[in-house]
Length: 199
Image (cartoon, rainbow, N blue to C red; front, top):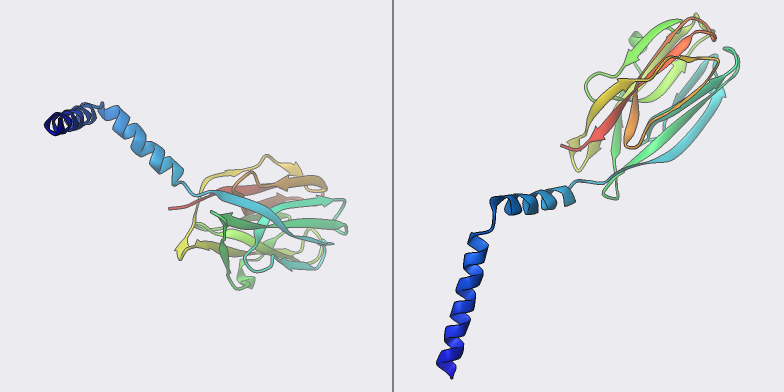
């Protein structure tokens, strides 16, 4: 009886091994792909500080570890501008943002300005002096998570919007990377966004 059980166990194991080794390669690939997909980090961007200020002679900077994810302006150059900062989390862990120093040499005349962070830079602040003929500059930062710098992919510019009556907001997993403007408050503004990418 014991020999029969032992023979049955060996036969069962042999059959299981044969079934495993004869499994299609596509099934193994699919299993590995599922494991890889499950390991893809979850990226979430939440509303952070909301900064409202008069446009002329204004300066703001998102708090530490926050980046610009939206902006709105209504009226002429003397009216209010709203800036929305955001906090980024990957797999539930807060992403750190390394703010660069203000650089006055990057200023441009607001009425003919074009700002775009280099590499994987994000916008973390802005200063504007005077009216539409005054100078504007932006402050940039970089994103870091678990000791590594995060990349920004799928970059794009929004459509043109009238500066005196517009609002813009980043899509899911996106942050603001640039802004351009032509003319006075009736001129047009556009924004650049990028998608946060790990690895």
